[in-house]
Image 1 (cartoon, one colour):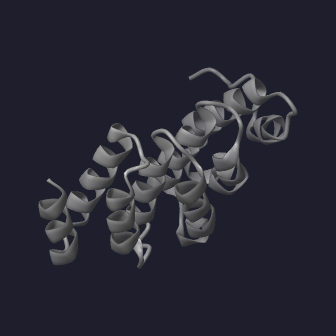
Image 2: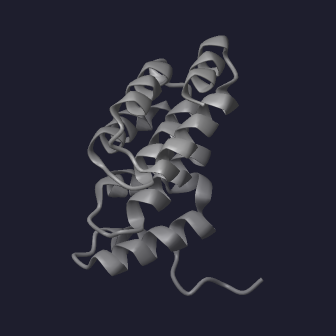
Image 3: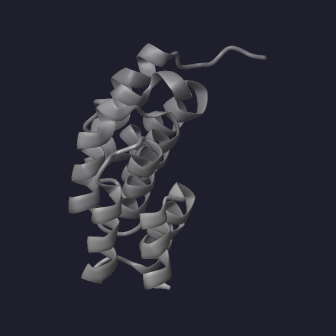
Amino acid sequence: MSDLIWDRSDLVRFVQSDDPEVRYWAVDRLVRHFPARCCDEIAELLLDEHDLTPTTVARHLGEFGTTEHHAILLRGFRLLRGLTPGFCLQALVRLGHPGVIEMASDALKRGDLTEPALAIIVESLAELGTPKSRQLVREYI
């Protein structure tokens, strides 16, 4: 395997760039080449202004994050629009946040999320597989 042009420390530095495109590029490289070691460096970019960065970060935290990322994922779920709230809730489910069923219930009743985001939430509830989550899925469908 060839050596990487940019090492991890370079990419972490680029995450702090003023340019949203550079930040997205750095996040994309970090999650691809250093998936288990970049969560803390990219977590705050869940609230980034770039169109794709928040979704990338939410999905990545769902796979590699820890309970330390609950707070930023909760903020993303409450503040963001598009697909990202769905991926934030999915990450919270996978990371074992205790309030996900109530959050999902409220989100499904609110009606202000996109259909794809709602689908991700329903899928996450089904993945959770608890009696409460299954009941909520049945009620929604």
